[in-house]
Length: 246
Image 1 (cartoon, rainbow, N blue to C red):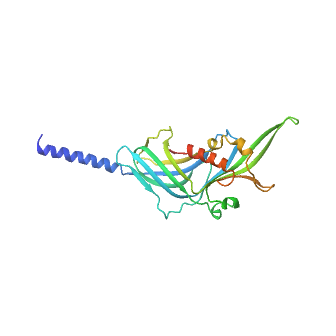
Image 2 (image 1 turned 90 degrees about the horizontal axis):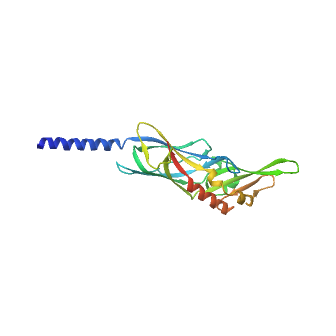
């Protein structure tokens, strides 16, 4: 092989490597969203969720092209957000394309301001950054009148703003390897599985401390009220939460 041919070959290799590097820096629009879901296997009827976010950090480990790390700027003011069964957008991000063997989102909370979103005095008295609201549905059969009697108790699950979501990403087939291509936009949906989180606490809930008055009773589940329930639900929320990329 002549020196000229060797130089051409080296230049070609460098050119291809340069193109690959450039391709792996192309941005992909990823919309981070949040939703909860419930398959109605529990006695809990969920009506809404609320979250207030202080900061988001992202870690992505790619097969090639280098790893990706970023965090949102301190001056970004994420508004408090209501969410339900349908995904609600938190923010859009431009993330380099590539094959990610590991993708993690760390979401830091801040206190929900009552005037900003909700009017629950009891929640405002807590340093709450994440809320799930709903009703516990009690079912009893009256054998004397041969009918089903139902009763419901409102509840508020109030997570401290010092807690943190550290959540791995998966695709819709539960694979942890994620492929991002600049030819399309993606949704990254933080999914909160409330059926799993509340699925084993019915008996404990019946023994919970009730707040409010006789006309407006409510069960508050927080780090200061019904703490055992709070710790169980908190653990199960964090254990099962994930970000689905699609």
